[in-house]
Length: 607
Image (cartoon, rainbow, N blue to C red):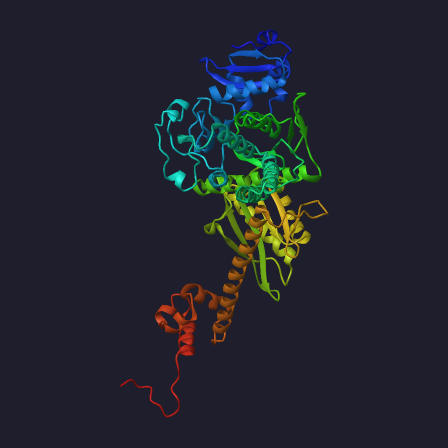
């Protein structure tokens, strides 16, 4: 048995990273802490073990190791690298971006610039990754149109060039390259272009544009209009690209922006890298939860991951809420107004869109996931303590107080279960009394379910306001089940939801999926109730017609309709068949009633 008290004695009150190991000596969890002993001891305090996953983790711990570091930030970075290396079972799953493209500035004489998905540690400079391939190609297109660079893979060493080993190619003839292979372009001039390109890719496009403007004016002063024209074309291209890229005030210089959206199982974190008012990098990371981590924990991990991945040294980080991380080199900002708030809003729009798109794709492939999400959301919205897997909705129908019918529709797992639909012919209510009709229907429905031992629904919806809800609740209390399920009323006019004992209605967002399901239930109950009511009314009309037959009363008329299903079949049947339902005298009377009598002067004799 693992004695955590002995293990805690060895752990210091210092910042660091802790590792949990199981009985097979497998690393199952890695965490960081500002104070190692306090953080680790919190896992073994039962009151702090807030969920089943954490309790499961603690039950498997058989050894604890730790690494002390100088600061909390060091612990933050070390935790990130260890999680990526070991991928422990109970740590969140970070979806990697190995397939995203990068722009590489090759480490060589006269460096080439191109895109790649493979990073080779040869000293070359990699910029990215670019989640949007089209964005990456747009940037490369601007660079190639603005700066003539070589695309060949020749070894352009000074010795080879001076020895005359190379000849210019078609790219030189087209003006796409200045011919460094034959010394038509100096290495200094080529490298100046590379430096400007690095500034553009790093978001410092304003520096390049300002320099170009100065060069244009100098060329014009020297009467070198051809050079001025070339520089002006380059200037226009970069200005156009800058206007498309700038989304905030250019005074915002080097900041990282993060936002998060999460649910029970997944979290999504969006990252924007802003340089001089221009977004130069953006990406959204998907994270699979392991221990129901808080948004603050998840965002902290994601910030570490992104800053390492992009090698960001930004001193300011814009976030949606405060993060407890002590580091003099980093300032966390939670903006409320202004340009920085606009940046945060943009990041949040991106993360919510990404989450919605991902979840829609996933739910199409896994319908059960969508069902669980909907039911979980309904449980939260309606303040329930269990998932509403079985929902029933009641609706009453009558015509001027006649032919009253109460309909019940049933949804299971947020979908109609039509085989379970039922309707009641009201027995104890005379005249138009909607409240009494509701009271009878609810009582009969759940009295029967209790007698048959059928599982009760988790949620009952009453189509109507406070009066109908009170009537339904009266029957539930009489049966002793009012505490076993949630019952609400929905009023049609304003889609108000009423709860027992609450004088004020609750309003759900009009776009809420919970409200849409409730509306679907209400509309389906109304449709089914109207259908049942019409059938009853039509049947009553037909029964009234049969009562016109001499010697046939309402009871006999209803028996005939129930047996033969329609007046048409009664009209076509024989006296012998009619006798199976009514007596001979009534059978002959029915047959005579529906048999056309010959007009005066006509013979009834069949020829």
